[in-house]
Length: 361
Ligand code: BGC
Image (cartoon, rainbow, N blue to C red; front, side, top):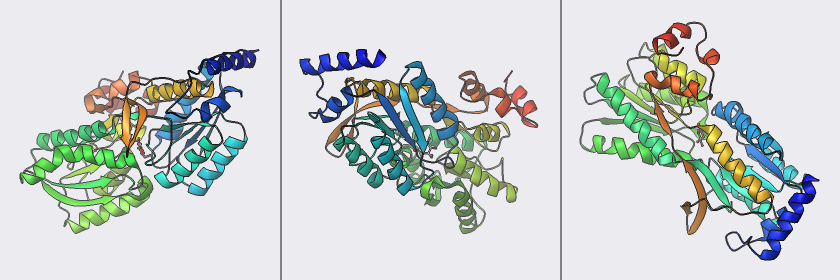
């Protein structure tokens, strides 16, 4: 019954010719004659807890609420597996495919193939450079980086640091978001380096956001700087935690502010303990909802206007960019109130008292 209604509605739209998306309606036509089904490929489960604990959960929530068929899989940082999953999803009849690419090259191959088979496509969280996704749904990632730069600067001031040496642990060199985060924090910190207010310490990009490798890299940074690093701009909570583990080994945790991103349970606990300066909260529920609304519309052969585009070379990609929020000790409670993580998860064991102190009731 449901299928029948959707098919008729979509065909009706088709005959009115109102479906042309980006001057190419091949994807829409094929989507409109099939039962809507949305495929999602997540990147891994180690670079950040979010993909499994937040994105999967909130995407499922949105798809279930819309009563649409879906298949969510995780490529576990394996580019070959990523392409195999995509092929299986396309063969399995998905009408829309959402990907979080592992790099732009393999992402593009998947998107182009989906497009050639009439499957609608969305870049979820990470933009595939040179790709062909019909939409891009993410946060304002340069603002994420700006909040990190401002956060580190605020914490350094609070510590009374004089001409602090700041090291960088950037995200994966193959993730366009990492480039945007860096542009954001550079916009705050570079003027301070240039004015000799801060001293630029070692800088490294962490391949695939690998948390274990980040610890090794940070240990090398600390050695290179003769133990004198006064602040760490870490691009997400996993990299921040890696730096904190090395600072702990050197009895420097709590003295050296470290940034993060994702408001992970571990990151929030590090903030409550005073080992991490701040994190950036991105309301993944909203990101998942926005992406799922678009995917459902596309899967039905409809087109939505997002009112905003992002440039990828010469291409204007219709986009939804949500607003990130900086989290310090005093507003960790907002992340819990938003249902992103639970009090039970964050306030375990020794954190119970720290939670109470931070007004988490
Ligand atoms: C996401 C971050 C995440 C990182 C590692 C980025 O593309 O925007 O939220 O921490 O990837 O998975």
